[in-house]
Image 1 (tube, rainbow, N blue to C red):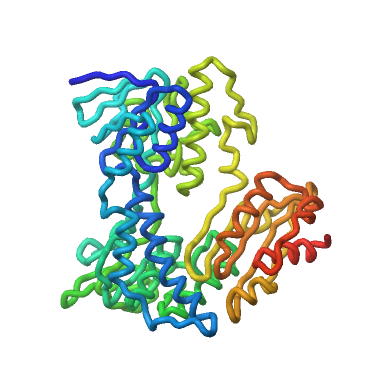
Image 2: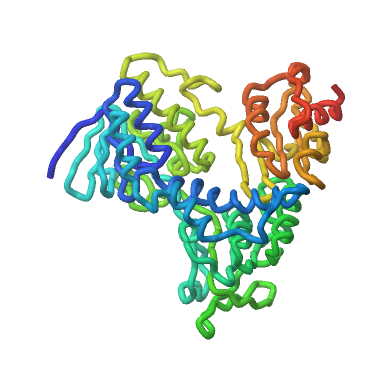
Length: 464
């Protein structure tokens, strides 16, 4: 048994852990980053990066088809798409990520980490890491698998298999209408699979405004995806080498592969949380400084999906930077200010969480998706029908929504759905996070002719 001491021990070597360790080192704290799998984490190898690499060629081909005079092929070349995806993921080689970490002054340890006491982490049962300042948990999330009879008898994919496969299944069924479900349904349909999407509600993306789900549903169907709304999977079985799916509404589907995309949960199953009185498998509840609330003292922190607060890579990285700043300040005896919107408070988790769904049409949203009962909110909905969108694509179809706090006259939510709306999102995020008064936002003149002209139309419709 060997023992080592660091200022900060970070468990989880994905983007969130990298940000926590890197910023701590930049603030003068000796930090170590521990991961049992690949440095770079889920996002780099199985989620954000490869999924977008699979989606982008199909989106580009569809965009080209919406313009006259642009020579395009009939279909994508799957082998070329997979080759480009693999160039981003390195086929799982994380040596570049390890090199980056070490170049940033971060020590890396590969192995399974468990918390074995206050400020103590043991790796693979034989290497004990002591933290003078804090242990920071950044272990992300893991798939949530439903308890469905027969699921173990058939060929299934999780999100990892869906983003890393290099052969196109003839038939693919997708269970779940969240972000992973709709993105992968469209990606694989455009790569040549016959896709069936099984969703429980009337439309996908139920956490978004209804018009968003309707637009994405139309886009999926335009790509040949057969959508089964108001349904679910009751039972699965293998029949003649294929998967037979019995839906809750009585229908039966045969498929080659079932992608189970039914959500994720915090990755805390085997962290040794029981040794400090916490429940394995549960989210780590944190305050806005990232400190785990159920543990006495200021030694256990967490950031990212593992907290259940805002399960998005960019929000996790933001929270990790806050945690590191808190630890640096405390180590130097400086005051920690956790008031809203301060350097030591991840306030945006509550008010200004941006998200993009990279389907075609894209979905870009921040803040509230709609009004909250009892609050002074007014909603403005518009079609995106401006000169910029007309030039962008023939027959451009898109919608925009802004939610206004009428007492303060500031935005509390913005949603766009349409081709290439993702790049509109940061302006909306700035407006929401900065609480920019509408009277001042009126003077932020959108360039002509761009899709951003929709900002002018939204404000005019509001009455400015």
